[in-house]
Every structure is written in structure tokens, then in C-alpha cells.
View 1 (cartoon, rainbow, N blue to C red):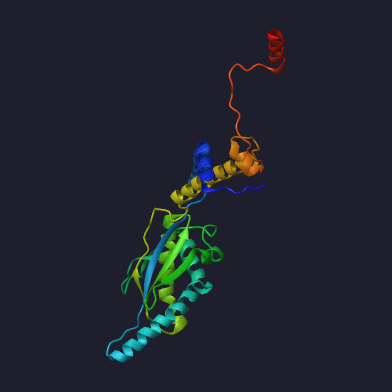
View 2: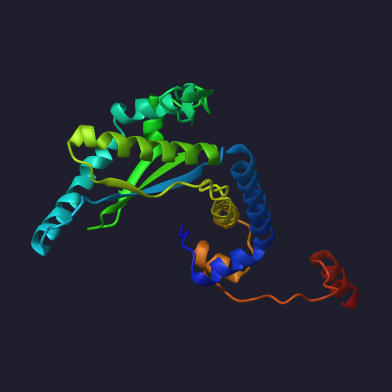
Length: 266
């Protein structure tokens, strides 16, 4: 039995099951919206930019170009160093442990004055094990600037971590690489718009999925429905021969009534 569907039948299926497809689209779209809006934890992103560029006073053009290319090549190494424990452990300490901040510079007779500032976060919120997965580093080809991006479930935390990493890396790269050529171009700022989940995209995907499921359900019903709806079903699906049509005659008599009438006439 041939179960293929041509374009005409597809259009008939769509028209016949349009209400179901609309209802399924609305239902699945609403479910997708609810899940993405209220059940999935939003993520916030914040980025800091760093420049790799050594001092070039008194150098000729050829040497400067060579140094620039060397700095570009170093970025790949810097990307790897940023996610290492030597940087991350110090970042965690700076954000979770009590810090002594200088409030007044002393003189010859008086010492410097400091005050203790408690850590902004706890070790449950920030630790070296989870910090690495929150960081991504990227740069444009042949650019001496690279971006450090942090994603977390808190917009302010993302900003604080990105700035702490940038500051720590700038201060430690000189001792690690025996070269001081990193400066912070722009600090991270708080961005209150979440980068994920994309509620609009997920809702649209749910709506399309619902419509598609409604259409597939309609196709299955059409393919499994053996009800005779027209002559084409008999000739195309059942491979029967059409011998003609018998018109309906209103007020027809059954066989016994017809015989009785004939006997009375004779």
C-alpha cells in the first residue's frame, strides 16, 4: 500500500489540523518560556581588556615590528597562564580573605595606617576549582589586545572576578615570564543583562517544535486513517477500478415493494 504524500495532501493535512498545530505551538512555546525564564539559572558576563606591549623607546622601526610580533605570539602563552593555579589561587585569596588596605601613609615619626576589609565572597562561592571553568580568553588575529571574560550567576561577581584576574595577572606576569609588557586597557563593568539563557530563542524553538509535533500527528492520523473519503482513496490507496457512479434517487422502493406493484398491475 502506497503511503507517500504529495504537496496537495500536505496542504490538506495542514488545513485540516491547523487548530491542533496552533494549540501545540502555543503550549510548547509557553512551556519553553516558563522553563527558560524561571527554571534555568541566568548567567552574566563581564570582560576586561589587556594590552601586551613592551616599552619601545629608542628602538628603530624593524625592531619595534619584531617586538610587536613577539608580543602577539606571547598572547597564546598568557591565555594558558591565566587559567593556572598560580593566578587563580591568588585571585581567590584576594576575593575571599580579609585584606589590609592602607588608609593613611605614615611619616618618619608615625607608621602607615591600615584597615581590615573582609572578603567580598566566600570560598563556597569562589574557589580555584570552579574559577577555571568560568573564564574564557579571546583576541583578534594579530592584535596585541586580548579580552578576559568571566561568566557567573551574579553580575557583580563576574565583574569582580574579571578585574581581580586582570590585576593579579598584570602584577605576576613579570616574575613568571621575566618580562613586564602587560597593561590593563579597560576594566570590567557590571552588566545586568544575562547572556544566557536566550529566552526569546528558546521560546521560538518551543513554538516551532509544537507546530511540528502537531503537523506530524496530523500526518500519522492521515496515514493510518482507512476511512473512505473520496474516489481517489479507492483507486490510489486500495488499487480498485472505478466502474462508474450511481446517483442517488430520492424515494426509491425496495425489491419487495416493486414486485408487489408489478403483480397488482397484472
